[in-house]
Image (cartoon, rainbow, N blue to C red; front, side, top):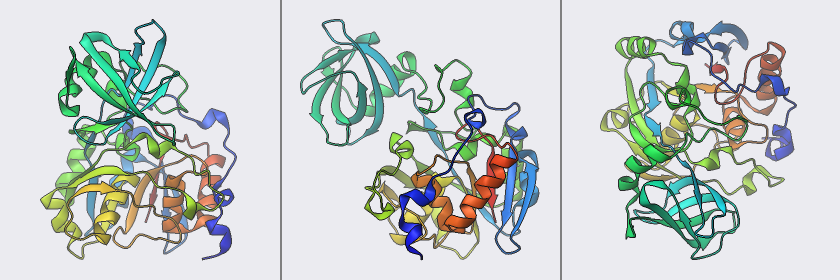
Length: 342
């Protein structure tokens, strides 16, 4: 590995603003698909509705079935000052990591509709806050809070989608196979599947589901000059018995998304631990050891996700693929187009 592959600056690129997708395409599978074959070094420009014809023979697919919660809450202090709170992830049943827009200190109370209240317990150095939630003055567990925030919360669209969420986002910013509530960001490669296409792929190919509850740390750019100095965020994962069976076999794996990839690769390094906290940082100095093929969207400059893509193809090739996508007007980020690395 060259020194340049350790430099965060090697993962920067210029992206025209007009290519940032603020809305999804309809239908979902009409998105563009850039296919890169590492063996032949060939690039094919296609569409997602043709995804299945590129799936290698005898390959198993791993999907992330996490479901995005309405993690953005608008409330106010008892004094009336408005506060925006973004749930990041539960640390345990009662202590929840959040980001708060507005000045708060320990013991600050934030009031929401439906009798829900947050009390700030700790201010973290990384800018996050730890809060407890109370319902009608009684401490409430995270899982018991989900039906309430489903009523009063908002879909937490990524910061680069510069608009308010709407009713359409409740279904569009969710995969058709989303099942396990807990993510604050969608596993975006999954968003391209229609119900029919997903059903067809699952009928024709061995597959399984893992759960990785994506946290807002997924959007955090790497600020250290050297990528290995970046403190990687941690996310809760759970691997189904069916997925474990596939992961423990020698079958080639096509991982649907970076989140599935992180889960599979964390498990590959920590055998028999089917659930817990995953904080694996994949990059060219820490390459995949279990995933054979990757389906992914196009990611932010200097992001851990772009570094993960580079762990499959190297920095120079990743930059070349992104330049090719930009030249061909691929739409990028969560509601953007897709890339398949074979």
